[in-house]
Amino acid sequence: MAVKFPIFMDSNSTTPVDPRVLETMIPYFTERFGHPGSRNHSFGWEAEAGMERAREQLARLIGARDPKELVWTSGGTEADNLAIKGVVEMYRERGDHIVTTVTEQRAVLDPCRRLEKQGLARVTYLPVDAMGVVDPDAVRQAITDRTVLVSIMLANNEIGTIQAIQELSKVAKERGVLFHTDATEAVGKIPIDVEKMGIDLLSCTGHKIYGPKGIGALYVRRRNPRVRIAPMIDGGGHERGARSGTVPVALAVGFGRAAEICREVMPEESARLAQLRDRLQDRILSSVDEAYLNGHPERRLPHTLNISFAYVEGESILMGLNKEVALSSGSACTSSTLEPSYVIQALGVGADLAHSSIRYGLHRFTTGEEVDFVADRTIDVVKRLREMSPLYELAKEGVDIKSIHWKAE
Amino acid sequence: MAYSDKVIDHYSNPRNVGSFGKDTPGLGTGLVGAPECGDVMKLQIKVNLDTGVIEDAKFKTFGCGSAIASSSLATEWLKGKSVDDALKIKNTDIVNELKLPPVKIHCSVLAEDAIKAAIRDFQEKWAERQAVGVQAQK
Image 1 (cartoon, each protein chain N blue to C red):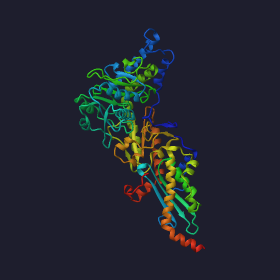
Image 2: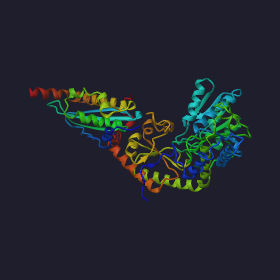
Image 3: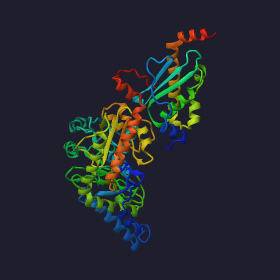
Image 4: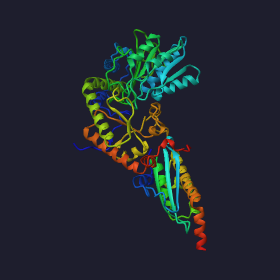
């Protein structure tokens, strides 16, 4: 099959809407456009039925017992904000301390920082090991009598490392602390069961699972324990008062359908993507010396691959590829800054290798031909850039680059 | 971020990539930047010791496309210039020529630093020889 350009391999930023999802959504823009809160006519009833079916579909995907445990939000960022700020406000008589990690998404880190700045919470940011894994013992030691929330992402959006959520949530539970996980990157990609995993709050989003942008959800446990959150948006009291605002029914319906498809195809799809990812990884690493895998070699998402290419800078690699391939050197949330990825830096690889990382995000529509093309183009570009890299030249001459006294700006 | 056509051109067809042999007469080398900052430029000039004119220039750069383009452009501009004129190249000239956006201005600053460092290195190593050469001409 001929490869069609440009190739999209940045699925950690977003995914295309699955045509089956779009098809399900369209009637909710036109004939079934009603407000789900309209209780007195069929337009409202139809909209509500669509929205509630979507809630059930999403509940099934994450193993929630009761669809009522899901609150629609505008996306993963709002869900994270609602979880963190909502818990801190609701439980302020119990305490004001949050435990999280340095490799969280900005949507978790920035609300934490704001709460710190406002004097509403104190936050412990736990480090990760060289593969991006959080140590449950570190969580245990960080929890104090004032801790109200532990927030640790299920899988990382840059390196794909999957955390030992069950162990981590157990530690929180032992101390009676609520456990939130940002699962925006993991939902729909790997099996999730909020019951088995002991998750009290879970954030997810539609657009990373072949659903539309503009819709996300926060899972809020209703039993054992019953978790309560203060709303961030006040108004008509929609979503049982947790999030006011008219639910965008068409988007919710799309999110639900996307969740349903993910659940159906997950075993086959994750195996296929993992195989393609390994093919990409093997092809690159066998042809390029001093290229390093970032993240955990086994405990990782099937669709994510992150490699640092020593002696060449990430953005220059992307520039060599971007006519044909859409890739990223890190999170799209932070790509407007010149800072290297804080996630890669947290692995302790050194800022130079952090500047050299490329993230490959495979998805439902990625083909083997695309993978081979991207691997070969990456190899070409890296080799070309190394020919013009003074660092590569020095290294080949046997000079230890760390021994040079660089005058940092 | 969209790149200007000139940045793309220099990135795709960099001018004067390479290194001179260590014993090249009239050689001056500037190595600026730091790997942790994501930019390192090595810029070399080969000065004619009799005329004081930069006969050739080469670069190698670790950095983004704009950093590569800035150093590539610098080598183009250096060739044929006297050392004194080369010192007059300003980072703003590079910004204007390549239409660098504000976040990439540091690439042009680094290129100017690299030019200055290469000239300083040349002057330290060859000042005496050059003086002799110039005198001999008179």
